[in-house]
Amino acid sequence: MRTPGAYFLLALAASAQTLPPPGFHHLHLNSVDPEKAIDFYTRQFPSTEKSTFAGAPVLKSAKVYVLFSKVKTTSPTTPQTAIWHFGWHVVDVQKNKAEYLERKVKLLPLYTTEEGGSVFVSSDTWPGVGGSLGLTKAQIGDAKAKGVQPTHGAGFAYLEAPDGAIIEYQGNMPAERFNHVHMFQKDPYCAELWYHQHLNAPSRSTYTEATCKVARPELSWPSLERSGMLRQPAGVTFDDVALTWHVQQDERPLAPTRGHLYDHVGLSVHDLDAWIAKLRAEHVKFLTKTYKMGDARAVMIEGPSREALELVEIK
Image 1: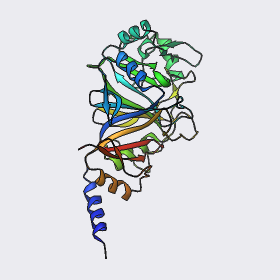
Image 2 (image 1 turned 180 degrees about the horizontal axis):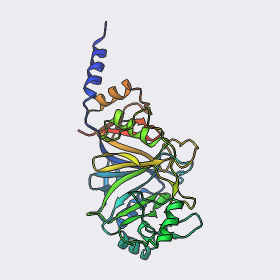
Image 3 (image 1 turned 90 degrees about the vertical axis):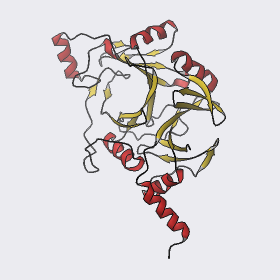
């Protein structure tokens, strides 16, 4: 005979099947000086502002937060975790580049070939083909032979922020806004399935559990690494913020995100108990019990490549 508590859990699990997907709430960083970091971001991205959440100073970008935990020493960025970098849309990427150079912000070079050569904005080298953001060795050879020229227009670029954070700024977009967290996944299309099945993220993927593990792609450029990048784009979107990813860049297992610079991603939900019931029924790994976060309740789970995901109940 089932107890009243068992019936309650069954009812929660049943209702969880129709739960709307979470919203994007925050990215949480570990920083030796959160105030200094917030000041840096508000200067480089003027659409942002200093605010507070759960009694602590935060960076606010429209409805999105970047939260900080103050730590004594710089948090590690190696070994690689599932979180690679995060970034903003900007209105004019070339204008931003010029302003950053004038302010002596550290810009990160994008290597254009394995032999060397670099640019600061992707549009200052050969454009990708077929929707790809990069060219393989063979495609670079073909572009050279055909005399293909850079467009010098919209593109993506990177800068280094406090604590060693990598920030992507991408344009040319209608307005400046925090728009993505870029991640690595062991199997990108399987990860997309995981987020769809467990977090109800919208997905148009045709992959299944039987077909989601695919061959690794060829290396391509431009790349933050001179040796090139493995591009295998996939991802999901919560509200208007994308969790976008590529396949992990080598065979070494990705490390857990907790305690690293990019500590975890926060998603907002309206009924935390229903989400807990759903995720426990689906055998998702919980990293914590329910806890208070200011006036809210929260819990932390683990994603498919050991990324920590915090579910924050927002009424």
